[in-house]
Image (cartoon, rainbow, N blue to C red; front, side, top):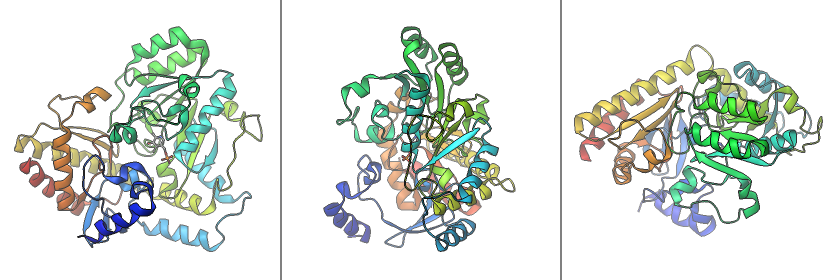
Amino acid sequence: MSRSAELFAEARQHLVGGVNSAVRAFRSVGGDPPFMRRGEGAWIEDEDGRRYVDYVLSYGPLAVGHAHPEVVDAVQAAAARGLSFGAPTVAETELAKRVKALVPSIERIRLVNSGTEATMSALRLARGYTGREKILKFRGNYHGHVDPLLVEAGSGVLTLGIPGSPGVPEGVAAATLTVPYNDIEAAREVFARYGEDIAAVIVEPVAGNMNCIPPVPGFLDGLRGLCDDAGALLIFDEVMTGFRVAPGGAQAHYAVTPDLTCLGKVIGGGLPVGAVGGRGEVMAHLAPEGPVYQAGTLSGNPVAMAAGIATLDVLTRDGAWEAAADYARRLTEGLTERARAAGVPFATNRVGTMMGLFFTDAGAVQGFEDVAACDADAFRRFFHAMLDGGVYLAPSAFEAAFVSTAHDEVALAHTLDVAERAFAAL
Ligand SMILES: *Cc1c(COP(=O)(O)O)cnc(C)c1O
């Protein structure tokens, strides 16, 4: 029995499902999850001493790889000065300035502790600002485990085969309208019927929680137009796409400007940080300037701020982001070539440092139905062959894959080598 299997058996006696976030339990691929003990750059090592090239990167945050020396130094120095004050610190302004420079639609920002808190606060702010209740979201988009947004909510619930979630009150779910992603006509119909009651549209500008699905042309600007006509706010949930799809997020890549932006993951570089920011006039409705209440004991925590600042500095220096995006391009091209050589139906999506791998002969993968129609068994076998060979992918066909600035030629060659054998074995 492996050490990881022993540790998982023990963890299951104490932690629900042996984990603290559902997808980590390997339910959809089978087998025991390896327990990780360290990470360096693009590589992680499990408790049995096996090494893997990591394409999970903590589900997105580690944009500069594991234990980057500059990030570790910044965190250690901040910790030595005190873990938390509950009073203003310079680091909060410093992180805010960096985010605003990269994402100009953010005039002012509120820092929180997770992506879930960011979307929860954005909804409350949108409702408080507009005086309306209804929210429009898209099937297969995930916005954290916020009650009103846990409706047809992407990877975690999809992996476990749970349609919505017990525990969400009917009245809360009823204020959430849902239409298919990339279907602007369906959104138009909802606006025609409920336009005056809609506080906000919340969307993943590149869907990253039903694997990786870019927006079709006209979708994001179509939403912008619908919101403008109806007086609703457009919220981009860039918790995953922020600093990944482009240094300025999906809104920079697609040149569509939201009213509010939710951030998380990369903004904390591996420590818990989230943010909601946007138009100054809307943000001014948040307490203490406005009546919409929002607060957090550890919000703007100085150690977490230090990790976020150092991560964004490394990511935006000397073409680092561009090199990571180029790695992602070469990886998806290399995988596609090897799949074709092995005669395996396969397709990829890629935007910046985010990727989707699909076992399908459909060609383009543009919506939830396309992802659901992929060969789940082929994914499962490919996943385990990659894991055995030393390449760590997310244990679900509904998760995206990520690249960091630490992924280099050695990591790429290793990955493609293992993939060649994995495709051949299918
Ligand atoms: C991960 C994610 C969230 C939730 O962030 P947490 O930090 O896990 O609460 C929200 N929205 C999107 C798009 C995400 O990918």
